[in-house]
Length: 391
Image (cartoon, rainbow, N blue to C red; front, top):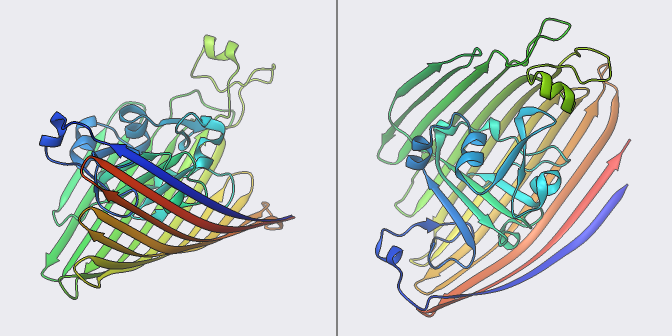
């Protein structure tokens, strides 16, 4: 099956500021959803911005916990898998919400070539500097899959060395570290965390509980050859192992929420077991062409393996390039983005069952002008998408 389509979007937005509110007198909150720094009071889209301080004060142990407890976004485990949860934004629902939301980390898309949700458990919450959530205006800059909005995650450049750990009931334990070094023209930082749970439900017929573990590790090097330019490289690795039950009947839940009996008189059943491993490499840089003009380029390569009933192998490459102009009230950005991904699914005997391929190429331009009392925003994007599925 082959699918080709061309998406063209045009967005015009007006923002009226008739009065000066109290928050205008506070320290401004800067949002970068359109890749151009803008005060949140001047943004022509709804936004939520969460700082490192907000994350620490929340007490959340994972990114899923923070998003579900502290933001307007709804998350829910996918088929009972707490390490792979679905996202609902703007009422799209848990069934399709994650398909209409683009999630990025330092500009790298987490959306997959198939219907597998973005796996936020592969991101260490201790390594996050800022989270931006925008609703409804991400399709111009982020393109395919951003109808509902976007979640942008930015990691820290830490040069401090820290080591933390915790233990709790149900076999829960966590550990994390950060370290780094800064010396004039470069910043080197590294971080990692681990999480383990012993299980909350009854043992299955094989003696296993719904246990799980995850580990996330990241290394980032930023080099500044001049005061107005930067080159960076980021290497990430994440691994997840989880046992989980697919569903419980209402009767079973009422009698024992910790049961793994799906009902139907079959008794306890074997837990689903999923393991995954992801490796990412990102290269990029920015160059200031003049006082008001800046060019940027990012390249990302990803290899990922997910094993459940079948083994799914993912490979994708992405390029994001742009030029932006920022001169007081006038802001403008244009760029080209490409994404090419492939997924092979193999059975236990390594016989290929199906192959899915998808490629995107998008060209966009967006501008805004602030008159002082009104902000005019205009965006245009053309995108070609090719998809094929073979069995």
